[in-house]
Amino acid sequence: CWANRILSLWRWWVTTSKKQESSRACPEEGQIKGNILEVNKEMIELLGAPNKKEVKKFNLNNVEKIKHIWNNDFLSSKNKDIFEGNLEYTTNWGKKVFLKYKIEIILSKKNGSEIIIAANDISREKEIEKNLKYFSFHDELTNLYNRRYFENEIKRLDTKRKLPISIIIADLNGLKIINDSYGHKKGDEILIQASQILKESLREEDILARYGGDEFAVLLPNTTKETAEKINKRIKEKCKKINNNPIPISIALGEATKEKPEQDIKEILKKADDKMYKDKLSEEFARTPRGEIKAR
Image (cartoon, rainbow, N blue to C red):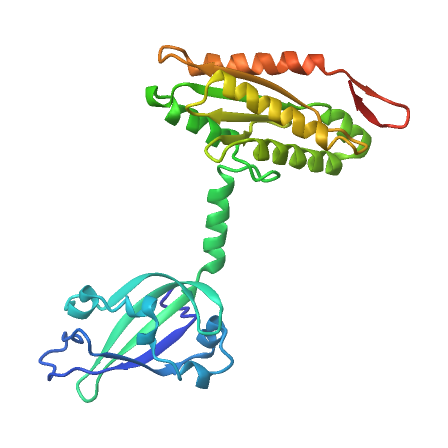
């Protein structure tokens, strides 16, 4: 509550060029000097400043984002006591903060007026909000898009002008064996490595998502069946190049393409999944007594 917990306070002097005729008079445009009169210890800490003296040295009108607060609405208002808003700001001492502020004009007939700013640092709250938004559409392990985002994009891009639309379904072979033999930490490492292989094999405009535990999905707008097949071949080649370690990476792949508007995109997705499953069956895995995994 702002009333009973003001965490930080800036006060600086404001003068007016004409005599104030009523208690509702406000500063005119261009009359805010921006000199800091007083600052409390909470604000000093918030700014990352060494002491009060250093804070009072600089003029707030030299800070563009703060100066922007002095807009015409603020300067000409005769009905509002308090203005409020959010401000993302890097201080003179290099500290990045996200402030929620409230400004109040304190009128004085003798020496002009003061402006008081009460500011609360909400950087942590904003970071949490940012992370929640990010992970609502991203996979936490691989940082790829998640299934929710992928399904939203299918709906959005399923239009005539995006034809042909190709879909690739990819599945990391042997993940359960890797988890059982080497532990889930190693399984996670292989998943991340597989996601990087897929990402490096795709174009910038392609949409890659982690679709399930060991499954990935790729949406390729304006992409022919032949191009999708070339991408699959590129993925297979990349897997072979890094298979000089004890745990080879093998990815089963299936693709399908929507070429006509009347085709159901869900059927295209299913067709790609079916082709991936056939490719997966063709990969025979065996575990040796030493716990190694071989693909043939």
